[in-house]
Each structure stands twice: as structure tokens, then as C-alpha cells.
Image (cartoon, rainbow, N blue to C red; front, side, top):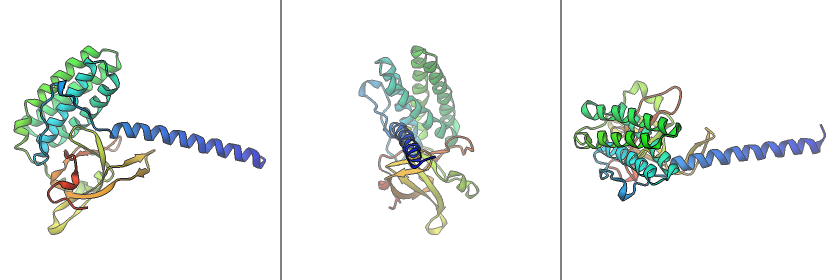
Length: 246
């Protein structure tokens, strides 16, 4: 093969990789966008991050309400984005909450999965009905969720959360868990990479900053060997949390 042909093949390979990277970045960028909750969505109010479980419960309900509103107003793309975010948050809440709050998340996960299937099947009205039930289930347990506190995971599973996706209050992707490590006095600390774009094409990171927070301020989702392991830190700015360091 002559040098000219090698150059053409190499150029096509580079252009193909660039196109793939651009598409992956665009998808990641959309997932990173916060969920917009219109005033007309009928969502419960947001909860301050000093009550993490309640903040995630209210945030999940708010994302589901935004999805319901988007379907009602014909904004299918925004509704799908909010629904996916709500389902991510609900799966973390299902793993980390207990009692009536855990039951509320269990019901919400069922309704949200059903709503996503309805959308896939072209049944937006049925999806709205399931989203409405998810909003009600979660709104009813926001108050008891305020009395629950998250806890750090056992040391044996700390490695399983390396590079886990980190969610904000409404389920938007705000960063990743770099690691869990022992902090001052032995208390576990979550080392976070927040902001920017992480794991574009599975291995590229752009921007972001490192923040360390007490691990018992994070809600830890189920660990997975297939698919993303997720955790949630329902705060707009993790760096402002008590005990957080840069």
C-alpha cells in the first residue's frame, strides 16, 4: 500500500474516531444537563441538602413531575431526559432508603420503568398516568425521608464504587466517585470528581474538580458489574457541604 493510500486510510480513521467522540460527547452533555422543573409541573418543593434522603426523594419526584409536564405540553425530548434522570435517582433511593421511604422508591421505580416502556411503545397518555403515580408515591414520603440519614458503605465494597456515576438531586449526572478512602480519625471520605464531562467514550474526562466529602453524606446505590454503579449527592454545589474540602 502506497503512502498516499495509507494517509487516506489514516485520515478516514481519525475522522471516524472524531465523529464517534463527538456523538458520545453530545450524549454525555445531554445527560449532564440539569432537569428543568417548570413552575407549572406541580412538583413538590426542593429540600435542602442537609437532609440528603429527603432531598433525593423530593428531587426524584420533581424530575418525574417535569417528565409528566413535558409529555402534557408536547416536549418529548425534555420529558424523556427528565424521565431517565428520575429513574436513575429512584434506583439509588431504592437501594439506600428503608421503611416507608424505601417502599415509596420501590413503587416509583416500577412506575417509572413502566412509563419509559409506554413511551417506547408510543403511549404517552399511559406514561403520564404512571408518572403521576410516581410523583404521588414519592411526595407522600418526603417528610419521613427527612428523618433518615445515609450511611457510608462497608469497607469491603469501597472498591466497587470506584468511578461510579454521581447524581444530583433530580438525577442529573454531576460527576463521578473517584474512590472512597479513610479520612481523619478513620471516618470514610468520598473523593468526587464534579463538573466537566466524565467517561466520554468510556475513558476520556474533560474539566471538573476534585471534592472530598464525608461518605455518610452520599446516598449509595447498588453496585453493578454490568451497567453503571450510581450514587447520589443531592446538593447543587458539593463543595459547600459541611466537611467538604477541595
